[in-house]
Image (cartoon, rainbow, N blue to C red; front, top):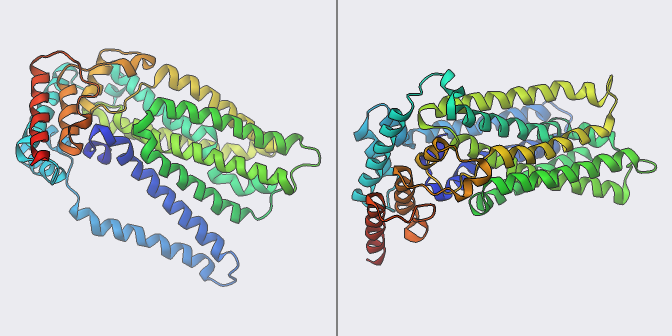
Length: 399
């Protein structure tokens, strides 16, 4: 939530992706440490893993004192001078003081409109009106991310590999974490380039095919998977599944969760969605053994269940999840209040204060090249203000 509130719309997907990227860095370090200490026969085989986990919290404690507060949050509690100071710090080197003032004024105007339009302050408000739709989207993408095989593979990959007859499972687990990191790295570029919807639907399509390949080979290949080209093919399919899963659903779902909610309910909506994700992960973790082994006895066929969920995820994204790429939170408020269907969201053109916030934030962070994306063409008072912001930016760059 914090990273999304500080990010300009044009690169919000890439900025929020840092969360998932660092998770994958941690997962790779953990997998590598477990593999590296697997041959040790003393107490440092487990102590090394614990000691390494202390480093990151210490770095966070050292750096948190230099992190500014969210300007949107400060405005919501009537602390404008501090909001201006925080926004000036964030835009340092890319915007003048007058440009920052314009952006902050637009945020204030949008906040007043939000409060007047719907005074949403309680947990129940997350389920009412357009906010209910937004909560449903956030919960849906979080649960589907876990249900398409991510929770299963992250928890039971080593067991699954042994069950289908693949040796060197710990080494394959390290490669799996490398594939996760590769997917998260690709998301830096793709999330804001091709959009959220195309990434999620495309990834689910390939994830479905890849899991069907692995489960099908492990179940019906004569003699089973015991090495050779078939085993290598299964490993490759699992690696590619990891790239698609982490690069799209593992990364984009956090961007969507943070940007889909209105400012007044963002903390509550994200809390509900994250809790739903953890509950879904918990259910899969504890139910999978009973499905894969006794009494379900599906064995390697369990992958087909998660592959089928990927097909359902494509339908969910197409019908429910709108395209939110390149729009400010305030412009997204306009879109949801207008009741735009998900499959028509890409064509939505904001004309109110939300579109002006989008323009100002992109101008203050990236320059004038992408400022007018998603803004209506009407030459009204709002667009005049956008043009003024762009003009100042262009003049500054010429100098």
